[in-house]
Length: 215
Image (cartoon, rainbow, N blue to C red; front, side, top):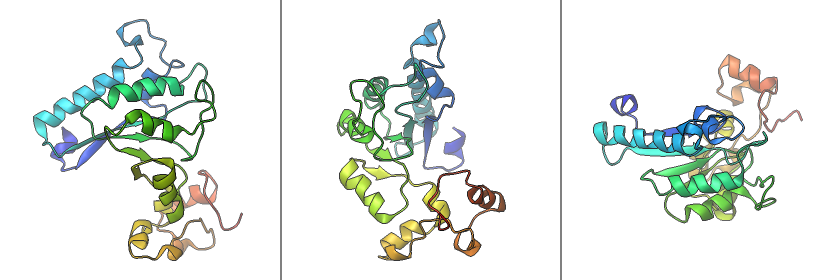
């Protein structure tokens, strides 16, 4: 409701990266013995409540998306088999997209019956055209973004760290200036990056994995 009243175009339900919704899906964290022991019940309930708020306060154009982490390192953790079931459930709900949180668009499945297969093409297959799939994961160049769409199977590309390195990334592609894109962190060129002092310090200290000119 607050997002709608504030004039936002939509909201993304954050079911990834070990936040609360993720923890209900994960068998590593969800050790409950009540009704919420069903790992799919809480994310579905959250989606339903958000959709109710959209119906009450918004309009049909208000976007609702869902972000998920497809696997986790903990054991017993979220597996691709669990994600397959979750995707099958939520992709039949009236949301607008699914966003998969990963560090590499070509990341492969750790274990189970899908071991060794790339995760994003699997999820794209499970969605089966019901809604767009957003992929993310170490995209720093125009070619990497194009590869994600043409070869990985995502419908939309999300970009995080690269937009912090070069906030004109999209505009430069649209203008045919791909060769001007700044796709690495240069600790000697503070003028290259429009970063706050704290974020500059974090980038410079290597808090986040980034291509660097000095490496």
